[in-house]
Length: 470
Image (cartoon, rainbow, N blue to C red):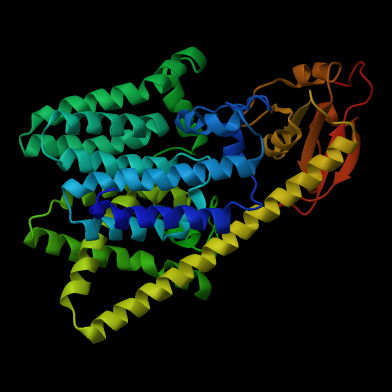
């Protein structure tokens, strides 16, 4: 390995090691992860795949998912894969920026709790971040065939993961190609976007009634798009909440501490752009791309998840790293000591939030395992069907199918679910004191261990196969 790649490789190895030590052990799959993993698992029937989702991350999961249903196996695979992706994506920038800046940028991004937490998860946002970093890097490299091919491949990768994010990423890149009179870059941009989004578009016509219908349905599931500000919601989520919907969490001292770094990012980015301009290093485009990628998640939806901004954080790490490297080389000792203290405090806060979030993931796995074990004792065994509250994750642990009779994931009618009870075990789950739907009111209730976020959980098990009350 070339000597200039060693610092970046060291960052990637450390990033992977932290995941394997702090996040992977004992963790279970989240609801979205269970949906994605079930699409390619031979052990679990595929869960309902709603309109907004894209299948890119399922392709990444397939090599591990076909070998094991165990979340730890999937976690280890993604931890190794994300470490490699961190190295590969930031390595593209070695043709644009000095080694120290590239390695520092990778370290800044990899040091965020949300980056480490999602490294081993079956979720697309971190992979969009890696693809975006590579795409902007290839765009800025000399105009040779390999750069064009890399740009097309990187944008196709982003579109495969999340077509909407590819759209927002392509906008500033296309504008830059026109402004700087390099129209040749428009071809790989268009080719990559079309190639990567093609599976999503084809599936729209095969399963959702066309592209317009899928886009409309996707917007409905996401609560509608346009004219909503999620800055406050994102700020509150920085304390470790993986989804803030609705985000009515009050701001407190501990949450203020976990969000301080958010206010330092614009300062560091601005300083980095000033330094980059002085040294004629093209970091404005990375900043613009980050801003565009953040638009839908800050201005168009009314809820927050820290993972939504991972692509923006990855790109903003580049100018921030430029500022940091310049400061280390130019400042005197007192200022460097202050900077070292600030970075140490930042790392400590990120570590504390990460450990807390990882502990919650482990608690979730234990809770779902208890629930699945109790249902298994009640006769819910494969082939079986789970419906109702948290059906997807419970079904994944039990190796059952999950079917909903209402809501965004409705995939079976009440009569069809009733008829299914004659062929396999079926269970309907309700949280707390929520009554079951009309068709399940004559079913036998059974108390279950509570799941996270519920004070109690109740299973409704159908009687012996026969006519059901209407």
